[in-house]
Image (cartoon, rainbow over all chains, first blue to last red; front, side, top):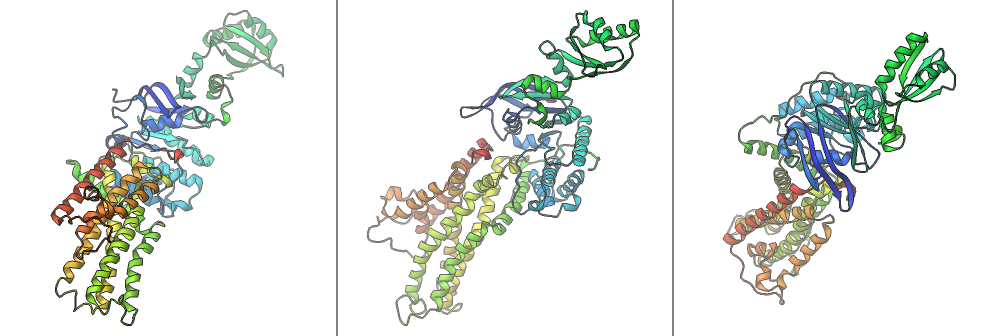
Length: 316
Length: 289
């Protein structure tokens, strides 16, 4: 098994007769990988399988060469911030983080240092000595994040980590994730906020009904779907009709449609590179003034829409 | 949020032999669990339970029945017998039994209900160590509470008969007290292991706990072989004052202490092993609870 990546080999999980995930083959390299799919698609099941909270019905999982059935080794490398919004009773934020660092086996002094460091990272120093039960939802989310990163793992598994955070805290958290990823850590994140996933992810895993539909960089996944769903490009220019007439003859263009305001046109193409070369040629030869060229559907939202069939904006 | 980031794996300090790591982890679990057992809301019921026999013995020590048979202040022999009966029926079969059921079944089941067990499962911790740590924490709570309950009850027994000079330090008084305390501790050890495993194996542990209670109660009617498949039989065998089990009881020779005590310990070890096997396969699925 690969000691540098997270691998799923033909993994299936059934809850009785209900399918959790089926025949998952996946290799996750360092960086930020986002799990994207609607509710009940199997994202949390994958995360729980990675952390040994549930066991696969079939197949093998390896986290940097360690099996999830070996928690003593696994959680020296892995931190998991799940979606369970529950805490041991009666603890303050600081006690919560420090207590479980002690359970990891750290000495009280080191546990104390790391607890404060983690609490500082999530900006909860002032509330650290308050009971967790009195925290707001966003604060509870942040203290759970602190608890999951406090032992400084190299793999972080984060189930909807942006839930309940205000915009400022979201931006800070994404910045923290990016920084950790740049340092070679694995971050596996599930989020239903697709534009944020798009912004922070190095790659995405699209999952639906327990099956992996696609994986890779957003652009790579988009290109894979080019045949079924030609890429749409919006071109703003001074003579859209003439431009349309010039490019329509090309094999690379599937469709050309004028924009409602007559100031631009939508081009559908199955070969974006060839189209961009054609665009240069047409512009130079005909003196058309191009104001902007922008792909309309090469983002995660479009990929999600094409693969899963609904608008991704509100899905999880 | 701070941008300062340091990346390193958890390397528990006392590297070397795992035993030192496990002991440190057990200490950490104890710190969490013992305070929960003593100060959590669930502890209230335990305090009430533990105080019942003390309160009853207190009443018995102050109520003058004017020569009636129940007055423990007048007839030391009857007082001892009365206490043995109280200890057997009230302390052992009720307070310790239900108290241990409450403490030990909640060690895991309570955390599943609170949806907080996964925090332990997400630590670099062998699950067997978790079982051991939780079991010891339950033992600490149950032994402290029920030993105090036993000692408190004994205090009023001896108080009524002229404590401390009279019966406690003369003759076999102290030995009897220590034996009662020892039986209480052994009951916590045995019942604790049983209830912890019940809490791990059953989603609704009340039914098996009540079935076990029924088994322990009808134990006196059982044929000799079945009689020995119970915890109460071994605890009875250790009792300093033999208590009659009634006219319907099957007569069986008490098991000597040198067999009873090791048997209970071996039994506990086997039950803890079962708990360890179970917890290794345990999955977190709060949604199904």
